[in-house]
Length: 165
Image (tube, rainbow, N blue to C red; front, side, top):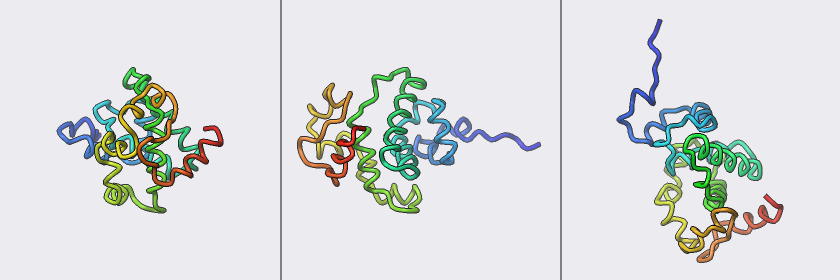
């Protein structure tokens, strides 16, 4: 009988990105959906990987629903903080990730090709949003358009919003 291997528990000295990348896509999504992904691994990188996986499989409107409900569930089950959910940041990143997707592009190549998505989230979104607008109660509870510069392909996002997400 071979020993059971538990890579996450056994490799606690790894950084969160290395630990996340050690998980297969199905295992990562299952842990996320169950709320069993350790909170220390629920980083900006983890958010993007989850959204990338969902957006790679579903049309944008369905993907946004899955991303939104998944984050709300994880924040509630794993963190006990449903109020930590931020609608504008979630929808903005879903839109940006969807625009960066390339057919059949593996995750490591996506990461390499899109360094801006993985940089400091506040600084990246600061290209488009003022701090006051992005961190307002209105932006947390519902989507607000940027006030400093339009998002790439913003017209596509506005068309989606017009259909009543």
